[in-house]
Image (cartoon, rainbow, N blue to C red; front, side):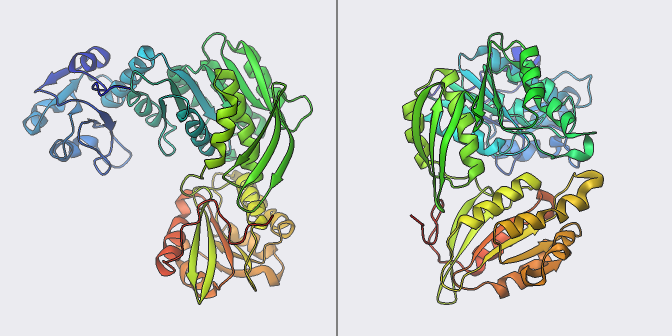
Length: 487
């Protein structure tokens, strides 16, 4: 990589059809949010659900934005604050359209090998795992956080340096036909689907319909590209049909199925890590994962399938996985100093669905507690489950029992169905909101406990994590380490 600007004034104008007013500073990044904007960022004044980005242009330029991309009709009033790129109107959000065109230009100019990742569960963790292993083998650009929608994907493309060797893009959806335009924009060399589960099911007639929506990612594959599919998922035949109908040159499967191309022969699960003994296209590979959990181990097989498809170094990727740490809100681990000892927090607060909660409960079950310690699950409502929402919540009781969870605290009206389905001895406290649950949980926690927090984003289970860390500050960060690792 060089220190060359990400975009020049000439390339911006050519890609967007815009007209620069004023002299742009060197463009080194891109942003749609003044709160995280860095000096040199190109600020896109897109229209959000509640606010119009044009209202923040003066602040963006004051903070050092290289230039601001604005609708032509607003350029005159805003150009006095600094350089603006006025883009033609004719759509609901001309600035978003300009960002999309710039993202397409970034894709057209790069020689990077591009990977696209989707799936009902595990797409962000898998994207981060790919970023981690590929970064050790070359300059790698990847989506930040979960930037996987109609603005997140073009923004990520816009930020991609021309000299990248690898690009990793997460693509999400809530409805059918949302992945199609994003996959066409990314045009991946390799596309991976982690799994298909009843997530956003209220917007679909069936699980098969969700599989069809996920299968849209293969429509964007470059001719001769590689489709990577979970062989263990019941919807595998449907996903395979989508891959075969695309321009894919081949299909790579992963899982524990005997016919999987990337097959787990054995998975050893420990509280603080996992060990995977696998066969990757016939090549024996054994590796350690720094992030525990069976679901992480399964998705790592997909990662290895992608690495092989890219022609990257399998051995180096296997070594890199040992240092893999979970993204914030997706399994981050923290020790808490509490009442003369330590408790242990697993932060799974970033979103929830039936599959991911079952996986989180299984991971909690593997953690060894301290003397008199308990395994405590703190669960918030799972949303977008449609008419079957009550049933999906209630059926988690079996997973709680199977995982040996000692106490369950719940937030939200839907999780009350789980709470009431549990034996009395496993019930902690049920509250209407996550805020109401903070004090009862803090009062109940004791030394030796292991507590896991999870729920849909809008339930704001993260505030419980923040409260635990604020109250019991002082415990050493234990990202990836357990209180007492079992042999």
